[in-house]
Structures are given as C-alpha cells and as structure tokens.
Length: 329
Ligand SMILES: Nc1nc2c(ncn2[C@@H]2O[C@H](COP(=O)(O)OP(=O)(O)OP(=O)(O)O)[C@@H](O)[C@H]2O)c(=O)[nH]1
Ligand SMILES: [Mg+2]
Image 1 (cartoon, rainbow, N blue to C red):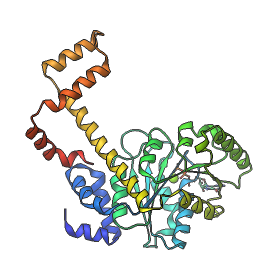
Image 2 (cartoon, rainbow, N blue to C red):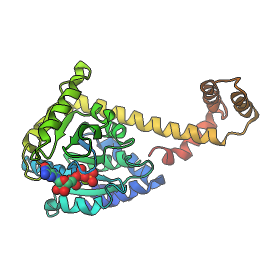
Image 3 (cartoon, protein in one colour):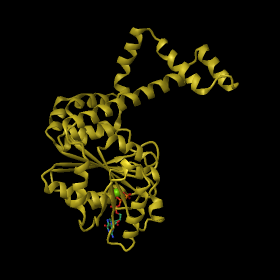
C-alpha cells in the first residue's frame, strides 16, 4: 500500500477517496491490506442508512439531508448503492442530477457503488467503503439502498441509524414496505407529504408500529417533502437522537462490526474447504446423509470438528497467514 494514498486519504482528498473505493470494490489482496491499514483509525463517523421502496424519494431526501448537515458544519460522504435493477435503472445518472447541488462543495463526497450478487443487496465491499470514508474523516456517511432482497438485513450491520423511507402512491402503499424493512427502522419517513394520500400512509404506518413489541413502538414517524426541504430539520433531529453518542457506544458497535467481518470470512473459508473436501470419512458422511442415516446438521458439525484437525497447528497458521488477505474483506 502506497503510504501517500493513505496520507492523502486521511487528509480527506476526494481523489484519494475515489481511488481507495475503487481498490475496495475490486477486492483481493490489495483491498484487504488497505482495509487492514485503515481499520485502526476508524469508528468516528456516524453512518446513516436510507432504505425504502424504489421511487420513494430516498435520493431527493438525502440531498436535502446533506444540505442540512452542511449547515451544521458537518462533512459528509454519500455512498449510493446502484441496484442496477430494471426498476431503478439509471440511478447513477439520476442521483447525480438529484444531488447535483453539492458538486461544488468539497465537504460533500458522492459515490455510486455497484451492487453485486443478489438483487437489491448491498455490495460486498460496502463495509470497507464505509470504513474508507470514516478514515477520511467524514463526519457523517450516508448509504442509500433500495429496500429489497437482503439489503435491509445488511444495512442493519453497516449503519448506526436506519431511516426507512416510504411514500404514498407506490402501488399498495404500506404493502410495498415489507414487514422486514419496518423492523429495522430507527426512524420512519413518509416522504411526498405534499401528496393527498400521505396522511393515510402515516396512519397505516402508525398502526403497523402499534403492533410491534413495546420497545420498538417509539420509532418516530417524520413527514417530509424532500423536494422542498420540509421536515428535514425534524429528520436530522430524529437521526441524531438515536445515534450512538458516547465513545463507549461507538466502540461497542465497531467491535460488533469487526466480529461480523471475521464471521463472514470464516464462513467463506469453511464453505470453500467443505466444497473441496474429498477424504473418505467426509464422503462417507455425505453417503449417510443421502441414505437418511445422518442429519445434515450432524454432518455439518462433523465436518466443522474435523476441519481444523485436517491440519496440524503450524500448517493451520500458515494457511491463515497466506490466505489472510483474501479472507478478511
Ligand atoms: N411530490 C413529491 N415528489 C417527490 C418528493 N421527493 C421526491 N420526489 C420525486 O419522486 C421521484 C423519485 O425520487 P428519488 O429521489 O429518485 O427516489 P429514490 O427512492 O431515490 O428512487 P430509487 O433510487 O430509484 O429507488 C422523483 O421524480 C422525485 O422528484 C416529494 O417530497 N414530493
Ligand atoms: Mg435513489
């Protein structure tokens, strides 16, 4: 890793940020060593995830939210995950137009991120990218994702605060918001409050909230008109209100994230090892599963137990050493 890239990144140079994100997106050893180098100096930024159905007004809302953050002197980075789905194709160009007012402002960095893998899912590299923006000393990092597929689960992991954006007139209204996505909201927004059916959407959301566990009922419902800026002050207030405040809280979140990254890397490693395994003991276990003599979970436990035993201690460490850079991202 070129030290100068790290130095420029730490100084908040937008070109270094763009370059580092490109490295993170490409994956592989370079991405892993970059991530490793920056991790010790992350954990200060507030990460806010915006998710919700296509067309709810997330990008427009983020544009107004960013303007409000800038008024308070905070620096911002926006990572908009481009779902490259037929539904919201062209999001990249559209977001540039929608957030165009910030292009001249060095305090705002905007980047579209390609989503890989499952439809609507976050990019695998989203956590490293957030960490890059954090390392570059952005105060607030905003992540936009379309609420579909796995993304609502993943945004929980990445964002300190989740804002779920809804709007009236999106087909079946609240039906468009799947139960799962409501569960993850720290703040609910009914955008397009200028439309006649907005009040109904608010009522529907409130009644859905009233069915939730007592501890989850206090999620604020904020009405906004993203295109005019109405309700944005209230939105920022609601976000800051649920944000982790103390260094101890932030540290706990960061530890949880690192644990998840390690768990994901371990899962990938175990999967790869099991897919490649061809020793007779394991093949016998597979035959027993096939014959209904052994439960899948039991075979899995057996494979896990003998996974480490395949190598002696030194060999295991050597394997971890050589594969470290691929598995950490
Ligand atoms: N009437 C009204 N229209 C709005 C409001 N906010 C956004 N829009 C419009 O809604 C449309 C979708 O807005 P976007 O900000 O692109 O929505 P999005 O949720 O980011 O969409 P995807 O990224 O494609 O999922 C655009 O035509 C906006 O101009 C609002 O408060 N009121
Ligand atoms: Mg958008």
